[in-house]
Length: 347
DNA sequence: AATCCGGGGTG
DNA sequence: CACCCAGGATT
Image (cartoon, rainbow, N blue to C red):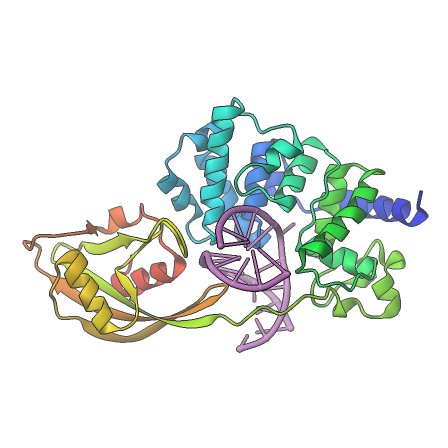
């Protein structure tokens, strides 16, 4: 048995036991709670997640409670967190467990990984943290730490590279508590072995770190650059009636921001927007072009949203969904439309 | 294997 | 602005 592996796991877990943060999802081994936290934490920072996690668990305290909720409620609890398919997949998986597993999260990594939204990382994380299965939980954090400690220079955006890391972790899991070790690895990445300015002086395994010895810690991990987001022009209509109701619409069930709500909007310019207002909502009103342009960056798109405002008389025959302020708050809107609502309506 | 899918923090 | 982040589904 490798001396390196023994010392690495011991030093890392010892460090974790004394230095770990007191995070809400660490106060329980309930697989449901662990699962919620892991899904929220995908591509999302701890500080952002905490308030969402607290609110979500208050609203859906148990797996059956979430299973019985309507998707709109779930999306509302996810509003502003991004990657909304996470919420829909989680909800679908939980309903599957309520139907096929008597409401209990499967105590079986292979079964758990079959569920919607549960991939290699989330599967390993929940199964190891809740049930102490010897399953790797390799995320970006773990790949950064191990690429440095082991001096692995493959591109971490490749699947093949992630599997290499999983093999190393499997070896380590044989000689430690999986729940603690997996979390220790991620905690080290979050607190010490950071992307920039890693705090090697405080690192419990710096003596074992090859990148440290070579003086190349900050050059790792190697990661392919992502394509720049493409520009899209969006035109958006904020139409109110004389009773302070505003026209909103639901986005398609698939694709970008699926199922979320917005003010009527089109890809394109004023003419395209007018056509939609006429065809879909039977609205022939004069639009006023506002000077503000809202810029919003997604992972692969950059929106420039031009705003057009208008008012119609209440007695006109309304088509579409018109809501007052109180009703508005119950729908789930992407952040860019929340900003627009705040600016033009004060909502 | 490459692309799609949000939002916020950091330097 | 560039880069990063507790990824998974789809094609």
